[in-house]
Image 1: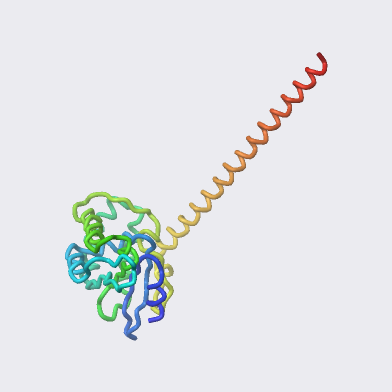
Image 2: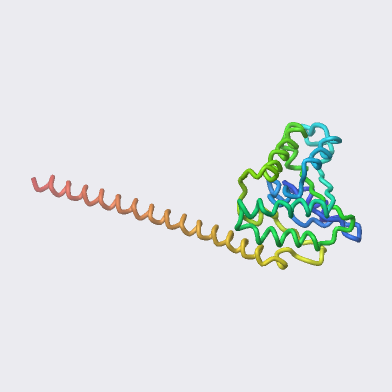
Length: 228
């Protein structure tokens, strides 16, 4: 339960499972958006169920909101699997990661057979629950209508950040695709930093060259003035 309380204080969203012990183990965390693969678990009927008991989100953030999806594990994974062609068509580079994530979710212990998604912090950014649910409907409609939408091809944007918990398996240890994409993302950031430093270095050299040229020109003008 401690993991659940700690996650609840963080910004964003998270995916968790109930273990046989009765504790809630957070498997993945989102940041300021709901990760791509999580959305593929959802159907329009899930949004209907969320919207019915909720009502408006309190403006002061003090009242308790019901922002949790409790998805039937088998039904949600079958739905996501049926959308595999969508990933293959628009995000082919993410397909190995998607396959690993789907299998990992299949073999992970969900004692009550429910995949739980909590979107409390994200939903708080919307004036009403209807606005929040409408945004989810539009995202899910892209899968069903085969319309491309935009997501980053990173582990964080697709699966979410993995959480360390008491489950038997770690996704990053289980999935080679996860490790490879994480390496690529880290290298890309490092490479961008190097290029940024090079640009700064080139800019510094250019500035020094201009100053030297101005100094030489000034010196030459002074010499010419003294000799005439």
